[in-house]
Amino acid sequence: RASSRVCCLLRETETDDLTTPQCLATMEDSRPKKKARKGGNRGSRAGAGGKMKQGGDRKHSSKHDASSKRPAAAANNIGSGRRHSQSRAAEAAALEMLTDAPVSELSPQQRLDLIAELCEAVLEDPDSAFTSAKAMAPSVDGDDDCEEHVIRLPSKVRRIIDMADPRLNGGDMSTARLAMLSLLAVFRDVLPSYRIRLPTEAERSVRVSKDVKKLWDYERNLLEHYQSYLKLLERTWGASAKRLEVGDGATLLSVTAIMCLCELLKSAPHFNFRSNIMGVVVKQMNNRQNDEVSAACCGAMEALFASDGQGEVALEGARMVAKMIKDRNFSVRAEVLRAFLALPLRVHEDEAQAAKLAAEANKKKKKKDRETADIEEEMREGDATVNKITLARAQADTLHSITLTYFRILKADDLSDERVAELLPPALEGLAKFAHLINMDTVVDLLGVLKNMLKRVDNLPLDAGLNCILCAFQTLHGPGQEMQIDQKEYIDPLYSLLPRL
Image (cartoon, rainbow, N blue to C red; front, side, top):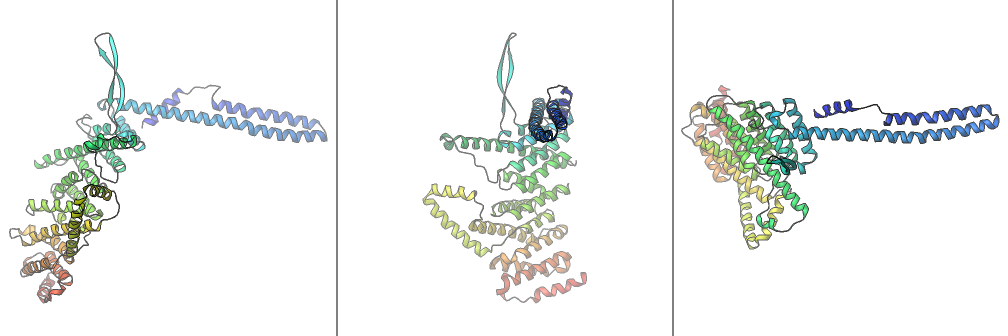
């Protein structure tokens, strides 16, 4: 690290001087001892009165010792403070030297030291980490005239982003990978817990306080650097996707990029550019060339589904996954469908219908006073409480989207045997979990589909047949209780599967 080199530099520049704090402390400590010894001799030569003088001299010497130690301690504190300030100044100078130097001119160890120092500086002062610094640089006009002009140096975060790009760091893949991971840790710490809305032209034209303007500038710079980081990650993985198309494997740097996108989706699903990250991650859920990437993307979506409290982010993700399954004509991994099982759906469709009616009534009221509605909407975004109407509406739409996907898989006639064996168990497992939330019309359709499937239960895979029977029982014990259906139609296929267990 740069701090170790700075300490070595300070040791080399140390000189022996009598005015150092250590010498001063030694001199101060030696003076009281001589006075105490003289006082003791005078007391020994005297009689009884001399003893009294000796006692008085001891008290006087002890007081003098205590008073003499104070300037010595003060001198030590001053000396340590000077050394600490010199060390900090030397570290700052070393960091400035590394920062000003081009990345291509730095050694691998210096690049790692620079990444560590910059990340530490960003976390210490995030307000100035995204702002470009100004510096004076000489400019030569002609042969004799030399003037200075102001140049803008890249910000600390921009410097790390440049080192994470192999095109700018001389093709050093190891440095680029470590810089990507360092930026991931930095952004996970500095990203706010709310979605940033940049001020409009009308809002910027209004005179505001210095604190408000400083906050606007900080949020704008933060979004610009965050967007640049996301573009770098997407571009790095996009180059690897082209390699996978021609049969080459993914590089370690590209796998790091997609892993960073997954972690950002899990840690900041509420923040800006959420849809862009989700679009990349959802596409790679069905990555058949790299199982590690597919598992990471599926895990990120499952974490997103489970942690969403308002339901809107989960609804967006469920619609993206359902669209991807439909576009690929159901040629997807079973883990893609199992990701829906992480959805914490609790709202019945009938309750959601009532919530939709209440939401429409609220919209009509808001149209009368548009300004008040906008203010309430902004206040609701920063509120930590869950809006029950919003949650009910979002969960109902999510349930409709995944149920439609499951029904398309069950009713598809052109599925090959391999795809049936892979997709039917997770589809039936999902229907068994969410069957108690669907309305009566959907229950009738679902039981009709299951009954047709059980007619050819011997031709179905074992796990698919068992999940089909389980889904039927879950539906009959939930919303199908009022239908008075004989369960014998579903018990007989179960007995026919017992010999295959």
